[in-house]
Length: 318
Image 1: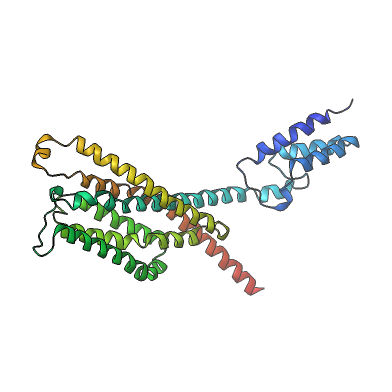
Image 2 (image 1 turned 180 degrees about the vertical axis):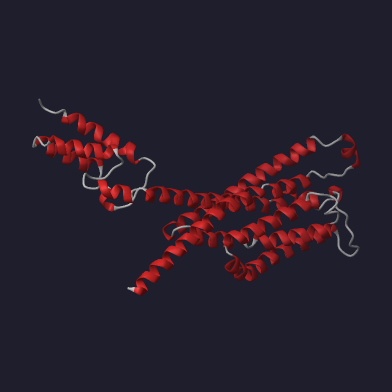
């Protein structure tokens, strides 16, 4: 009775794909394509050597590899799980950086979205200067914020190198949450001068985000992925700008439509404060993600350094 070898040829690619789904192979000897195994099974079936064909088929059921790898399969069984965990942590860092730069660039658009309201007299901000008009104060605010960005890029580079990317981003996000949240509260930001101080601090911290993200990419991802990660950061920046302007416009309209009648009669428009409240609140999302995935990434880096040091010691002893 002839063996149904044609059924074996059909089912082998399916079983091979199912057994290797979600797993990472550890050695090149295990990376056999389904078509290569079909050829082996066909040759064995034509020679009436059905035991070898069946052994190749059942090796796929056990998780891949050829018939001579029964002993080595147990040795490398822990490696795929480790590589899978490492990949998940790496993509967790990648997603955290994407969300970080998206939310930071979104918060950067809060000032342009509310500039017209801030320069008006019904913004609720007290103007204390007698020599400068409100427009003069706003113009100087924009000039100083630009200088603070330039100063941050110059002076924060060595700080990021010493602290590391994750820690630098965490400090920056905390500062953004505090400053933007303070702008959103009338008691902590009652005047134009206090607004200018908060904006200068925000822009100073904002200037470090790109360098800190690039530093994190270099610390936690493989070199072959650096260009893709930087491309994702650039995409996050443009996406954050587009989403934030649309969202802030909707938020201003929504808050204005729900302002009490007595506030509307008084002529004070405090709807712009909700923009800064939202800008500060969304920074908590990347802060939590960086804290979670950064802790796992540091543990993985410590293990890698220990392995490298052990290998170096073994090499020197030999």
